[in-house]
Length: 345
Image (cartoon, rainbow, N blue to C red):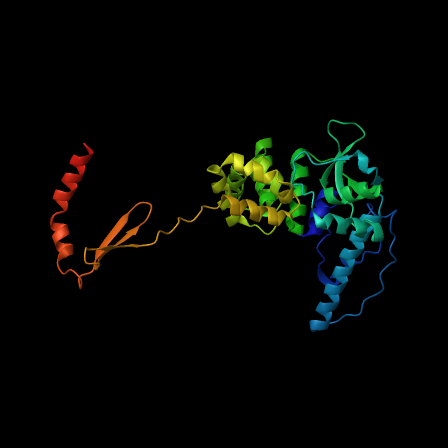
């Protein structure tokens, strides 16, 4: 579903009628605007069109259609439905879709962009369901945060949304921008489930199938909240590495992990570096390799080689030095084992 279609649905607009017959492009440039935007932008009547055929006609039609969509979007942003709100009156969504990152470099970039060019795209809010005079964000939290930093009002569209409509709008905006990290999407899904939303609503908000949704929620249930808060969104860490880390946390030394998370040097790192530090700290340590030993007889000949690991010992004989010794030992293994067990008793 396109961004335009999503906005049409959220702002209560009806889709344009499908053009037919000789008026193929009539709906793209109507003689009179729809009542919703009439006070905001009154376009002139269209000029009569010359009929074109073939590729040139198709291209002209496509360009006119795109122009009409751009005009509609501009009307939406400049029309009466876009208002300015005090940023201090806007609260976050009741379902968090992002993980806070105190060292987020992109926020400073956004603040400078808003400072220089203004807020180009309005946020979507609803009247707060429990606090009169306040509002709740469907999407646009970072734009609102930038406005707070700059002490500017927020350009917003106000719509009366149910809880389900709000989280679906919130999820679809994130899906179209595709800037949520894997772990942010995982916890967004988990929080919706914990709030009691049915799976159909969650899959619609997330834009995923049931299998992928189960995988997202499974990982989110395993990663502790304090570990998530310390690491942050870690956009470079995808599903496999978060899944590995989730398994490693289960058997981790919690004291050592807490010490790492509280280290100022760790906290000063970027979010992806923090993930890498925790991932490395929790990764299974490779078993130390022991050097092979050589067994010599009284004459100094290297008769046997002993190789040890944590769970086994390998004994090999040099047949060129002592032919037949290996078979002799094998034949007497029952006697050796019995003698060994007797010595332990």
